[in-house]
Length: 595
Image 1 (cartoon, one colour):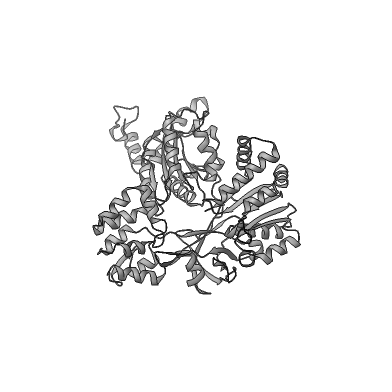
Image 2 (cartoon, helix red, strand yellow):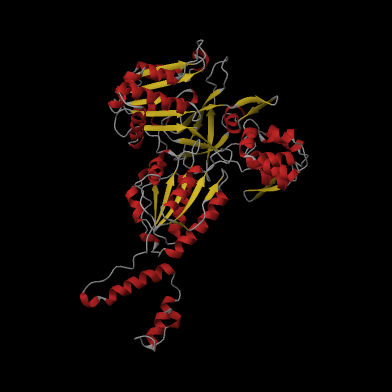
């Protein structure tokens, strides 16, 4: 019976008591009413001397995330915070820390997960992903859930991990309360829409309790997070960006030093630095001219009115072409060839591989409105770089190792937006907006144990931070580095520092692979095979294995090299060697930072 329908005839209360009760409850929220109902239930049992606790919620909401670079973690944290504000009993948990036996007890689950490489789950989601697809996964008939995926439509297996989780939960009997949302790199608006729908659906079937009683966020969020985030970056200062490759090098690699003085920002070896950047003004000017648009036309960017030029410089992706632009530009300009091309996923992926936005406009010139152009472009997103320094060494600075992306296509020189911004266009003492992305999936071992580091090219970055940290901590655990590049003379990044580490015993062993210095190309995986006997013994003695760099090929080749080493020197089959590495991964002794 509703309070409004209550009267003295339909209850044991006097009319005065009824009126008082109506007046008291009229301004109460659902959370307050829930608490009061539990309290009164306890009072009613006073004769037995026991006071019942407030009514328990029908269940709790678990927000579960799998994140490689930190984006999914950030979204999940936002969703959990919104749930808590709404009085929902919520727990935020990383998939890396999630106990699979807990699944059977869950009533409401929101999953936020990113996708790696060729449709692979992020490292911290691998175990749960495999468990849900295995024979031991329980029936989940009593579970209500929804899944949010983060991905990039430029890749073939867009949001595949989210699709997997959605399908597997459904196959186990769980009920999806909100349709899965697959988000592209510009995901803020989609996340908010899904969050609103998902939390509303949860509240329909989940009793609330006071937010003060909600459990902490599962230890997933550091107790003292920086005030500076992706949405609120710190305005740092560029100190230096010297080139650290030689004159004859095929690639321009920069050592970037940035001041964080007085920011209060802290980071650990293994973390990444998020960098907001501006597009090249010359590229923007050419694009505007090709499209015959008014460079000074006023448009909206992040709630402010700015010129079209400023919007394109600061707000939209111009160098990372994606299938959506091809389709939208084709439709807006009546280019049937582009529209048809965009309908075939494989064909459009090949088309965008070495093209930028301006290449499409050059090849298919046409009139387009400013509104249609901006609608076709994706919003600018920051780039993440593995940090190449330890605070114990550089204090209020952060260092990066950045290879400037530069290539020739269609008789034109193309550059990467962020790398050329940092390496070429940003002058010393200029402002650069940054934030820290903590990466708990790439950490030095908690105990002082040996480490094996494989980091060719700019993949050396986090291992410079590892070695600095171990040096300053006087660590006794041995360190072994595999580094490779094209030429010893021009491409031996941080050569002097690494030699110093070696001479002082901070770095115990170093194996080098310079692919173009001999007739037959030699890569780090070849050196791994050569040193297989000792490497296997290091692993048997408790060494942790780290790989950083190119994820499309190098990381796969290195993984296979270690499989071969374990087969040969561990006297195992191929399957057993794979299981050996899986066991290392599950115990946090095999970690990758690949891109």
